[in-house]
Amino acid sequence: MADDLKEQKPAGKATALIGGVLKEVKGLKDKALDDVQSLKKPQKTQLYKSIFRVTHDEKPRNRALGILSNVFLHLHPAKINRDAVAYNYTWGMGGITFYLFIVLTFTGVLLMFYYHPTKVQAFRDILYLEHDVPFGKLLRNMHRWAAHLMIITVWLHMFRVFLTGSYKKPREFNWMVGVILMLLTMLLSFTGYLLPDDQLGFWAVTVGTNMARATPLLGHEGPLGPEFGMTAFNDVRFALLGGSIVDSNALLRAYIWHCIAIPLIAGIFMAVHFWRVRKDGGISGPAPVMLESEIKEPRRF
Amino acid sequence: MDWVQLWEITTLPDNVPIVLLILVIPFYTWYGLRQAFANDRLIDRLEADPEMAKTHHRKTQPWKPGWAREVQVWPYLLRMEFLVAIIVTFILMVWSITLDAPLEEPANPSLTMNPAKAPWYFLGLQEMLVYFDPWMAGVVLPTLILVGLMVIPYMDTNPLGNGYYTYKQRKFAIWAFFFGFIVLWLSMVVIGTFIRGPGWIWFWPGQTWDHNKLIFEANRDLPDMFGITSMLGKSLFGAAVVGLFALVTALGVHKLFTWNAFNRKIYNRMSLIQYVLLQFFLVTMMLLPAKMVARLLFRIKYVWVTPWFNI
Ligand code: HEM
Image (cartoon, rainbow over all chains, first blue to last red):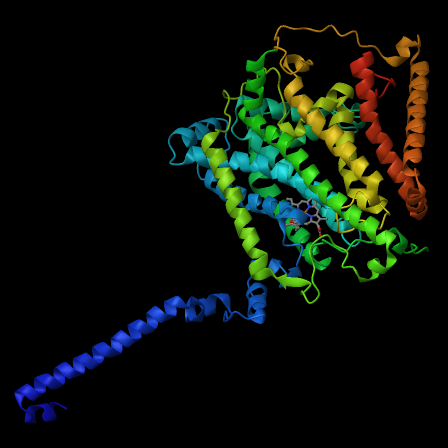
């Protein structure tokens, strides 16, 4: 190469050099154009394919694979009753409840960064959140209102499931799981109520846990409680509060139930709930109506 | 009328969800029943015309031959979910920007809040405390509510109305649920929020809360009204009254449950255990309105007095 160049005239050398560079540049330009082209079709990129594991042509098979091969979306079947996607059947209430649970987990974790479950700090942390933490007030408000909203949507979800008779065969068990989820949702809300350590939460929890005193057998003021050996220092209320009054132990217990135990349990039940929706044959309807004349005789033992 | 106070109660930040609930429940009741009635009309037509029943697709939704019965989840369902998530986020954002979560004074055990109210979704239980002792209102009844809800699928032997809205085919079930959920549970939440004032005294909406008001309610026990004084007498008398109540209610439930030929057909499908369970839960549920009437109208505190428990 070097010898070749030496033998040529200087001018020729320059032209060749420029030509070479131009060729390189053109090559680069073509590559750049290719990249731009690929931006228009992100589904064709190696990055996309590696993440989503499918080539995403507009083919039914690939659309189905897009659902099935994604860990989050595979909660869904690939296909679904054409009339079930309309809002009017499920009211989307189960989905909205789950979405609110996610919102609550997210905002809740952020709140945990600022909150200490101790008598000295808890209330001040809330004040700090409200007045000094950037967007702290919005964060607290969102957590509060999402919790209230979730209770409303759980009730509405149950109402819808009842009205569509969706608890009937084969979904009886999932209805039971649902009732437990509703209880857990309300308990989540209730344990959270104490955490700001203000008058509102304190008295609500005092009123609430006072009822536990009266538990038959297990409460010291309940029927047969004293006969069963219950005092204010060993009954269920004591176990709930970690003491005989609502104080620092109660705050810590509420915190742990609220932030760790109940969300975990609820998460497990939700996994079962969604799994069973799928296993019970997907969403129950809108199914073709059945007529009275078509009732089959029940099987007898 | 104390409009200011009514407004204050309504706009108390923690009460706003109930206001929302009061709006949303009638809406969805209407929304569900409207579809139920539409399906009922279709059912009537199909029952009148067996030929049509053989070929009809049996839904109120539109249908053309050749349409696939199922659609792809992506995009048809996912886009809906995405849209709903955006709308919910938007509502939540607006709500959180415009309305602040409440924060009272720091907790102070020596300064009692009056009225000290549970969060609104538990006000049903707190209101039940007026009518029952805490072991009933706070422990036994809530447990029975949960267990009762859980066994619904195992008591309901009606195979119709599985997966579609209908009223005609499930009248008893729907009335029972409406009664328990809307008439009892939700209205008690509303009473607890809007009507109960300081000292848990009944104040009509718009009546000014009087913090000094004391009511020397001359509450009586039913046995006393009959001049029964001995504990044994009271126990036996109470048991008899409660037993009589259970019997009459159960007969009433039975009458409603076997109202027409269709209902009797469903009844015949039930096992003995199923029917006894159903009666047990419905009679227990009716205990609440019965005690509400006894307490609110006749100032009766206990019906059944024993050395161990009172009802
Ligand atoms: C944390 C609470 C809950 C969550 C996140 C949840 C979520 C869901 C979701 C996403 C579905 C799919 C259909 C739909 O959106 O309607 C569903 C279906 C169902 N849920 Fe829930 N649910 C909860 C509580 C409940 C409760 C309280 C009940 C009843 C007491 C219940 C009973 C059912 C049943 C029976 C189905 C099947 C319905 C059908 O196939 O039409 N769930 N749930």
